[in-house]
Length: 159
Image (cartoon, rainbow, N blue to C red):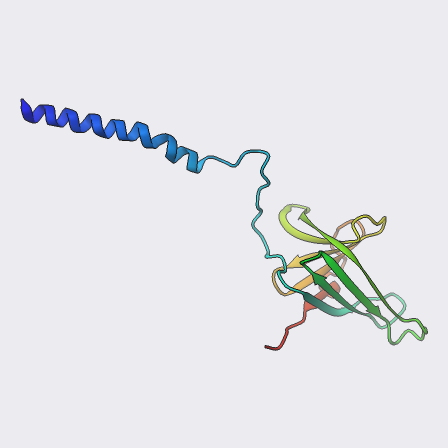
């Protein structure tokens, strides 16, 4: 009989432990409150100054030599575009401003889009392609007809 009471006592302790620890365990796995912003997985955003460059297509020249530098600490950018074979005197222009990070492109909700001059009526859009390139999107945030031709590659820094 004493052995039987010890089993009941042990069972009571286990049940008591379950009732005490169950709320703690469920609190740790509950979803974040709605007022907290969710962190989306996806490509890593630049954490240091990154420069991307390439030659983008041009309808009336051999190509636009493009360089885009992103400064993540201030969300600032510098975009330089040059058309050396165009014959125009002012064939190189540089502009700078701020950029904004946006998520989602078509069916891909994890896509990272960089929007230059978000307050502008005609912002430029670039899709972040992993850790190595950007793709220039059209004005409606769509891929160009030949997306590979609109890629800027990240400049590799010598260490």
